[in-house]
Structures are given as C-alpha cells and as structure tokens.
Length: 135
Image 1 (tube, rainbow, N blue to C red):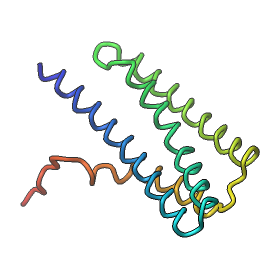
Image 2 (cartoon, one colour; image 1 turned 120 degrees about the vertical axis):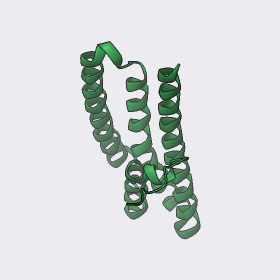
Image 3 (cartoon, one colour; image 1 turned 90 degrees about the horizontal axis):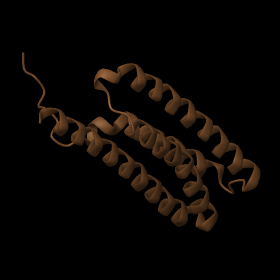
Image 4 (tube, rainbow, N blue to C red; image 1 turned 90 degrees about the vertical axis):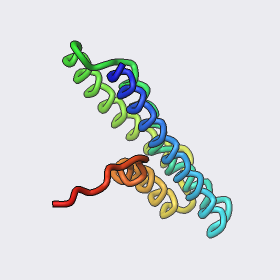
C-alpha cells in the first residue's frame, strides 16, 4: 500500500511540474503581448513550447516503466527518454528558427529558459515541504 501512495505522489509531482511549466509559458506569453504586441507573445509562446513539449515527452516515456525488480530496464528507459528529449529540443529549436523565426528573440529565450528553470525551482513549489531541522 505504501508503494502505491509513493508512486501516485511522484506522478502528482510530475503533473504539478508540467502544469507549472504551462503556467510560466502562458504568463510570459501574456507579458510578451503587453510589452511587445503579438510578435512578442508569439515569440514567448514558441520559446515556452520549445521547453514544455520535450518535458511532456520525457514524462510520458518515463511514466510507462516502473522501478523495482526491473531497475536495469528503468535506467535504460531513462537514458532513452533523455536522449529523445534532447533530440526533440534540438529539432524544435531548429524548426522554430528555420520555419518561423521569432520576431523578438529576447522573449523567445526568456520563455525557454524560464520553462527550463522550473525544474530547478520545483522543490520550492512543492507542497508539504518538511520544516528545516534545528540542531
């Protein structure tokens, strides 16, 4: 019973992170629209999606395999998912700059980097954080 609760909590954390990335993308798209009009909004949206779509792919690939006795399979899937995420990121960035170059590259890169930073800042947004230990 304990193991299933931990798996569910892990899935909820991943869903929460992906939602946070989507919210960051939408907020920066709105800021881009206010500051620079539709060109800035489109640039921010493309930058956010270039970071969000590979994260969705990674979560989908990792979510299909469970740990436990099949640890080797899980690690192999982890490496494949990370390689696929990297390849998808490179393809999306190339596609954006070839097919529809952003009219405002600053908004594009700010949104892209902000979506990537949500991974690093995710522990701050986690619910039920333990209180700091006192010595």
